[in-house]
Structure formats: C-alpha cells, structure tokens
Length: 99
Image (tube, rainbow, N blue to C red; front, side):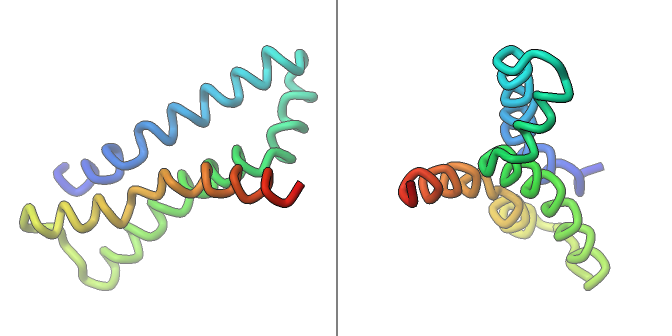
C-alpha cells in the first residue's frame, strides 16, 4: 500500500482542481454536451487531465524498470517526480501570453 501514497499525495490537488474545473464549466455552459465541448478545447483543463493520466503510467513504468521506493528518500523522490501540478498553470500562462 505504501507505493500508492506518492501518487495520491502528488495528484490529490490536481484531481480536485480538475473536478472543480469541470463543475465550473458545467455551471457556466449549462448542458453536459456544451460543457464537455468546452472542456476538450480548454488547454489548462487538458493539461490537468494529461498530468492525471501520465503520472500513473510513469510510476508504473518505473516499477517495471525495477524502481522501488523502499526508503523514505526514494519515496520522496518519487513524490517529487509525480508532482507535476505546475504544468496546468504554465500552460495557462503560455496561452494567455500568446494572445
């Protein structure tokens, strides 16, 4: 069970932000069809979703390559690597800057 802690720790805020974002879009757009259309065209929401999906794949790949967080140092390093919460704000900043 200890191996799943970095994933949940690093991504709990990301998952919450993604859920809050889609609920915000639902309130703003109305029907779910319009909400999902807006969601799939929103770069920050897509970046958030990508982080949520890519991190577990990366952690699983690391396990297959033999990495095991059997010390607190390795667990901390894995958590740091999984914490990509800075990507969605960076995407938002970049998109706004290009406008």
